[in-house]
Image 1 (tube, rainbow, N blue to C red):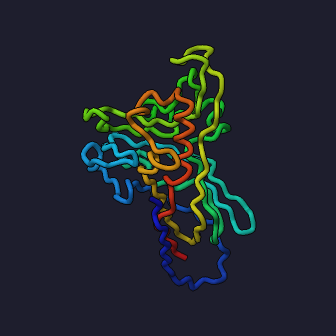
Image 2: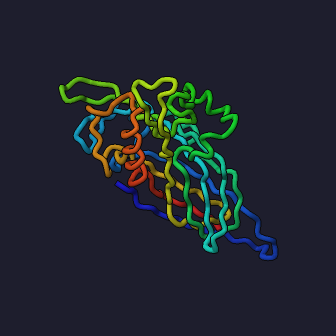
Image 3: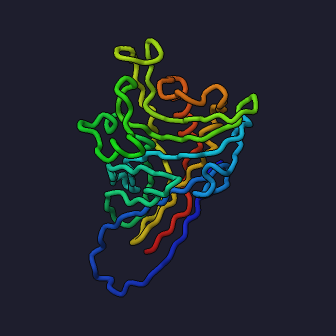
Length: 262
């Protein structure tokens, strides 16, 4: 369920009208929901949610990567941060993020990449902080290398009523000649990162943009996710990665509250 975006404008007086306008930065805050219910730290491993397939689940981990937050002005000028942020919803690490870009005040279409696109994923030398983050954010070479996009984990009640662990890990889709994958089995790599368009944001001297993730969307549209079928070992599962890409691109991220001070 997409969240309704709200924009709040706060005005302030500036008596020095002769000053030259300076470029500004924009702050982002990432929040998390399940079918409209906000997910707080205390909800991890305690609160049960029901996905579109009717399975009851709890979350224990939600860590994901966003990159290349981009602002496109009405005249087509593009301002891109060309950096990245690894969000840990449970611990609150990097919930707040200011991309490394300065821009004039005005109206912009705002977008970002979920994960890394191929160019960033294959960057020579990699990213030292990601190599150790969350136990190592990199993807093994037999699976195509690069980096994870997301690790979502928890438990669910399976179709015989037992509690089962699930690992919903998204990476670049990789197809193999045989499974399990090994040296020489990799046949195809498909970039399954995607661009999220948040819509138009008015940027002032101080601007805070809320990005909302609806976790329920990962399980429901356009592909109803059956955890009894796909609950683990999804990284080398080419079709599963394509389905996760489709679900994520449709209804997971949306623009929340925007607070702008002129």
